Image (cartoon, rainbow, N blue to C red; front, side, top):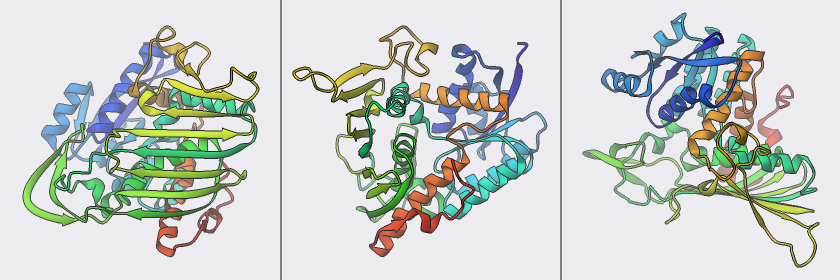
Length: 395
């Protein structure tokens, strides 16, 4: 109780609101941080819905206007878990009010918006992060450690996918994620942002991309969905789907590595197939989010006859973040990736810096997303440097 409290104000309260709320509540249970988060207030437009969410998830109070939340003197951090088209306005207002900010991905609708958000947090001098939680699976962090140690040598390839199948029913409703004015893009921005971030984290910066996209179902009935991705049709009206159902692109990296990326919600049998394989001159690594505690590692230095991919269960005290949880072999889950990320947020607030991934990472992610879209429009390779000419953005 003697530790400094960091009072959280969260805008939004559904799927990601639940994940973030759980993580904030569990930080003091698992980690000994210099500051501790307090669930001070949550905001949402539907008073009944936000009131119920506040009671269930442990928030002390609620607001029906995010502007009022930002105005409050008893709020230190604004956590943005709203649809993509609201990120920029909320984040810029929060920065001007001197609030630290954690924002869900993708950072904004456009590269231009993301640059405005970055400028706002830099000018205000507040701590900022973007929620790319998959970086914080212990197995992914251990993969990063192996790469940095040179165990794989020079990196030649990365293949990354994020495959889902929950949109294959043509009668699934036209939710906000399928409207360009709200989401910015479809599967490309929603799932592609994740594997782009993992590629940047593990391999390095993108140099150029070429891509293709497809919308398989052009119209859908109006409606909504729950956090379990179950649709609910709300009327007999239909609307146009103006974003992609699937996106695929090739990439070259600044260090010479090649990348192959695919995201889709039309891959039957895949619920959350977030996977990557990285090949280097001395070895390879594989990871699958549906089996997130395990990292598969191949090392060429192993003697002949014993070579092959070994499976490492990344729950030992030697693995990043794992020591905070359970004995070896007692696996952790999806929710713990958010805890690990928000621990870094608390450390950043305590020590006055913005941990990665922050808004600079969000901008660099946004430029790759936008470069792929421009490539689809032009049918040509697009160089990242053509879109991002900001020399101060050296992450």
